Amino acid sequence: MADKISAVFVPLVIGISLLAFLFNYFVFDIAATGSLMRSIAVLVISCPCAMGLATPAAIAVGLGRAAKSGILFRNAKSLELFKNISTVVFDKTGTLTKGNLTISKFESSISEEEFKKLVYSLEKYSNHPIAKTIISEWKTNQAINWKKVEEIKGLGVVAEDTDGNKYQLGSHKIAIKQSVDNTHAAYLLKNDELIGWFDMDDEIRTEAAAVINYLHSKKIKTVLLSGDSLERTNKVAAQLGIDDVYAEKSPDEKLTIIGQLNAVAPVAMVGDGINDAPALAKATIGISLSDATQLAVQTAQVVLMNKGIQHLPLALGLGKHTFSTIKQNLFWAFIYNVVAIPIAAIGLLQPGLAALAMGFSDVVLAINSIRLNYRKVI
Image (cartoon, rainbow, N blue to C red; front, side):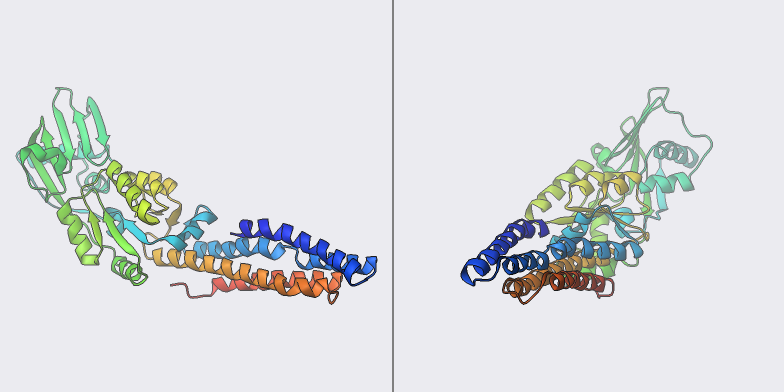
């Protein structure tokens, strides 16, 4: 915005300065020296320092306040983009929930010891929050050394042992042929035959309801986008009052949905896992948590450092108020010049006083920007 205004303002002021000299010298019969001094006064008083400071001064204060509150912006553009956000998309596990999963129930057609060993041996190759819980609770020193193992994002882990047996561990999608229900967290298959499943419990973040309510109060649409089952995703959405739900989505499907939502209106995506990284990059603004996977943190433009989403409203508020401060600064800089240039052009303001007045305008903009540090933004 400042660049666009300056592109018109600078040549306009130079033209006014030349006209001031010509009118004073030829029309009002002012001596060449006097006419030149008035022309110089116009240039000095309209020096676009204030316009140059309007944006960076406000952004510096906005970024500083955000950092003190544990909100890190990768660039100033992200801070400004918040003003347009009309939809916020959330991942579920680890974002709206704490991600501190616990194993609530499991069932298997093989021995408990063998089932736990197989699940642990597969999950140790995954970065999913479920895998972290399994690794912690079912750790064993007798893990299987697989001949081949691969994690398929959004689906699960596939492995082959030295005897040629194929094992799959993942969402209900891998067990569709077995006609099982989709209510369990993960299923274990051996050679395409279901041999067990387990359930996980997760607790919704204490601040999640307040954040969702705040977004709704600002007329911002909320969306829950998850790879988890429809039943569990709907349950969380119902508890929090989230508007729309997309469940059982792979990373590619998440990317497509974010693209579709972005085409309608600017979207902020909040996520914490590897599966969320493509969607975070696609969104207008990608927001990650500090304890998220490294890929999610590196992909996001904004990182919430306090292990939760409680500062998301502050990030949105700072973005909108920073932009309003920029507009105020540009308004005062512009009005200042509109008033001061004619005064300088008719000789009521000498170049020395014009320089002092020009410096004072910078101080006014700085003070207005500093106000952002103390304004209520949410």
